[in-house]
Length: 638
Image (tube, rainbow, N blue to C red; front, top):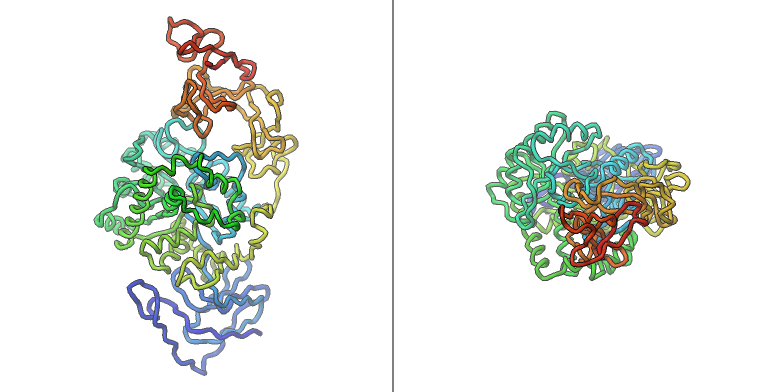
């Protein structure tokens, strides 16, 4: 039987002197009474953490934690210097360490790679991001913007125990007006956004969305005056909140300005997926938020990341250990001046400095008013690395004036409450045993979160070393193989013979030349394919009508395939955009990275008005027939 003597625990704000920072000082140890009987803990097969400081989600002190299976069995805070006798189980000495609940990130983009906005990466990184979060002690997260097909598949497999992953929660598609953030005018239609242009659109949107059982409904309210774009109407916001409430779903609102917060509150929306960064929140608005029971997920990390990218201050890029958590291609991209040109100008530096300053000032204002804060990072944006960003977010909350204990609560208990999951974000009897152990005193210095010692996921101690990216370990507990064409895949190995996991994460035929694909599908480069290409189905859009939804551009892919693609600004020999995009009616020439206007080699140029000379290109250029490659009667002006 193992016996340990624990010192006095600062078990709550009432047990010690309260100072202005709300942290605890001046704990005086009472004399130990000889009559106190030892407390017996543990069990056969249990894990018993002894000797450390325990933060249970709201209070902290010296305590013993017992993990039994996937649950916390006992938590014994020792306010009166009891001896603790371990009756059974593995004893783990965590002296000099802090034991706390696994962290919860309430704003993640699982598929985004955290590189520059101009960086395009064709590789599949969902598993890489999942490993990085687990290694950092992020044991639950909320995805607030990814392909609904992929993220709901990830959630289903995680909940079924088929893959090792944090607890996954997801919003699915974002509700935004046509052309609104983040599916701006020119984005191709897909499963990332649902367009709401009037209250009449809400019924059909919910009929399609609710069967997928999203964990929250994300609405985009974005009146960013610096970047004018379509705005969702107040009536539509109210209709969404009413429909969600009737169906038992929670709404969380993306906001950019104080006016967005006011519009949300007017409609009854009280959860916010950012703190405004375009202007300042007044103390009056902050008090209104507090009175309404609002919860803010500030995502200071995203503005801090943009600020540090703009000023060349991503110091972690110089740390070789970063490769354990961030793909090498992303690190290289964040060092590439050509990919950072737009985000390192003097004007942009001043802009992001202001945005970061507004966000921190606004957080201070709402905290002073008593608004609840929960933590999220917006991981996937430039320099906002999955998993690693959570420790920076907590440090930024402290920088903005939150006491360390409150910042840690924001990343644990408060975040769990936003999800409606009282079994997460706590170290209490009966909760899920998602436990993080870090070296040092995280209650004195939250940078201790950078020194991860142990991570328990549902009671299982993770091998953090094996999860480092260079090791290439798989997260699959029940590997899938043999998936057929069109089925969703989370890794290249899941697809059947002669198939690869394409860039949109569907199993598709492997190809190395256009003729290897069926007519109407094109052979496109794909990082998930061992031959370097997979067959992508076109959507059949009309190259000359250019009638794609949301102002996207219809382009030819080859082999008879056309598809709506991101619309850029270039045409007539101008450079292609970062996503190989050109204005509608033009196509990007990959060899020269220039936009070439479409024309009809049969004699009718795209967009030509009746009566004009058939087949002519502007400026005396010639219509060069590309029908042999495109598989369609089309040419480009050269």
